[in-house]
Image (cartoon, rainbow, N blue to C red; front, side, top):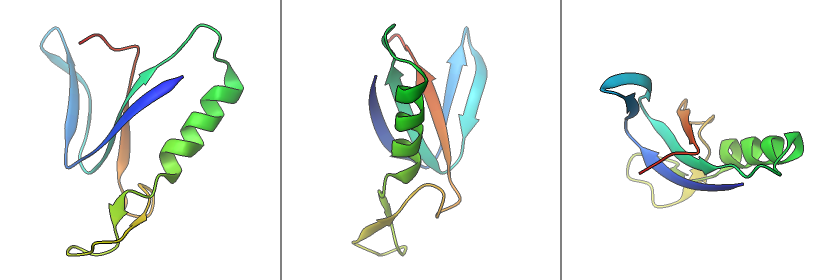
Length: 83
C-alpha cells in the first residue's frame, strides 16, 4: 500500500461529471492498494495519515507541528485511482 498525500484547502472527486466526495481543509490521499494488503496495512495507513504532522501551528507559523485532527480537517481518500 502506497499513498501520495497533499495538504489542501479544498478537494473533490468527480466521476462522470458528478461529485462523489469532497472536503474543505485537510488532506487528499491518493492510495494504491495491492491485492496482498489486508486489515493490518489498512490500520497502519489510517493511523499514519491521521498522525501526519504537516499543518502549521499558527497562520504565519513555520513549524509544522499539527496533524489533521488537531486542525479540524478531513481526509479525502481516493483509492486505486486512474489519472
